[in-house]
Length: 167
Image (cartoon, rainbow, N blue to C red; front, side, top):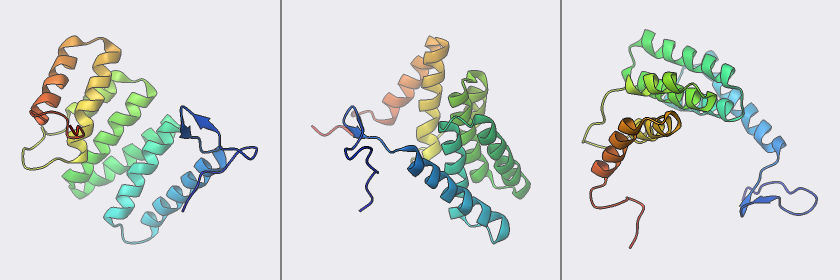
């Protein structure tokens, strides 16, 4: 079982959630970077692409938004060259998250609005993240019309209530 490291013999806590000390975060960043480096030297699989997406988002969360933006631009350009529409949509979604983390609201909005509308056949990660990013943008920009649209999208997605509600 993997446990967070302790600080001073006791687990540091913030609102009841264990806090992982920086050495663990740094080690996980290095491991993701190593996996992404493998993609440049061998046959690229979907696992490598997924690791690259996670690495870019992790860079943004760590405050390295310019580096994350660069990784996303590289990944999107690669997907465009290959004609891989699905990978390009995921890179655009990651771009929306990174722009949102950097406070670039118009870029975040443009990035996710360029994605195709969700299909009723099944839910994908971009289908879930798109309204969440747009709702956050609308709340920060005080755009009540966009916020109402995202509320409607959420209500339409689960007409009988939240998928997480057990009652």
